[in-house]
Image (cartoon, rainbow, N blue to C red):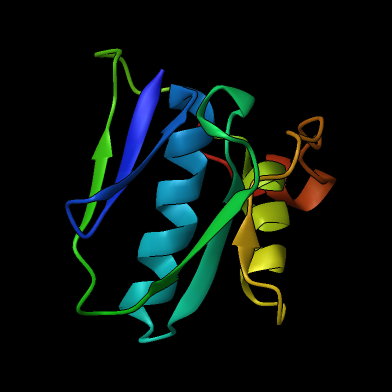
Length: 112
């Protein structure tokens, strides 16, 4: 189980694979200079509810992984998360969709 830390004080545990995908979306948005909200549900053991943080270029973000191996990236999941991040509600974790098979054109252009 990984951990996302915002401004050295707000923390949430997120499974490593999901955290990798969240990190990809966040860093892409920040590279483009696009601030956004990030919302997650809190565990019932700490009172439940939800937390939203405003992520911008000056934010202090830490992505701490428990595992040492980089998980495989599911492009469909990155796209689904990016869709939420670009909406008025901001980024939130959605279930991982099935990976999409490459199109014929992508298969031809892929390196062997």
